[in-house]
Amino acid sequence: GDLIFKDKGLVRGERESLKINLRKNPSFIGLSVGAGLMGNSIEIPDAEVSNVGFKSIKLGSATSAAIEGAYFFNPYFGLGARAKVLTIPAKISKTEELQEDPDLNIVSNNMGVFNLDAGAYFALPIGNRFNIGTKLLLGRRFAGDMTVKYKLDLGGGKYDEYDFYQFKSKPSNKIGTGVYFTYAYKQNMNFKVFADYDYNKSTYDIYNSTDENTFKLSY
Image (cartoon, rainbow, N blue to C red):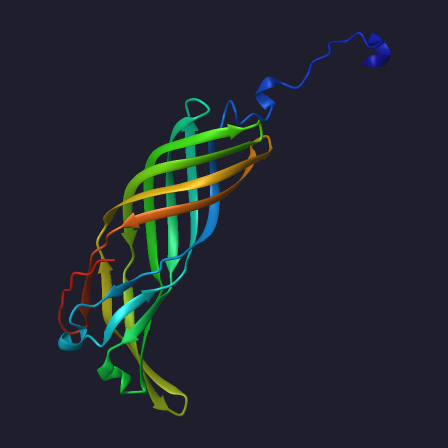
């Protein structure tokens, strides 16, 4: 083109819509992965009296994956939503009666949790490529059933394992907040570092294979 027009052609800079500018448009949608510290347990009321066989379930560090997005009406305020899935390992604590039987172990599967939230997002731009933000979300928590199994050592490397109790969770309300730091790497690609905090109070019912013993548990 320059051979024909001798550098007299149309000279145009970068299109404004392609420039990276978190001061103007911090809206986003993306995927995230993380780890969560539960730091609590599900306590069984009157475990020794009701002969449940275990007195508490200790919840370990969770792994999570989420899809999250927000539309900002200006550089500072927006509305958005988040869907998050968590897998939480659970460790069983036996009652004193069962601790006397070394051949009988209690094992459980992981607890699966699904959170759905929506609410307000806030951002503070730091130049065109960086911002920091926070959020306030309200939502619902749904947890899958968790099965507690008895594993009996029969000797000779053989085990007899069977389902004994099942935890069934009821959906509960939750509130969440968090902070995040964003770096705009290039057009339509950002990196975020985040720390979230979620609070909810859940109720579980416990059922066994022979009858129904319902305990109201909260954590």
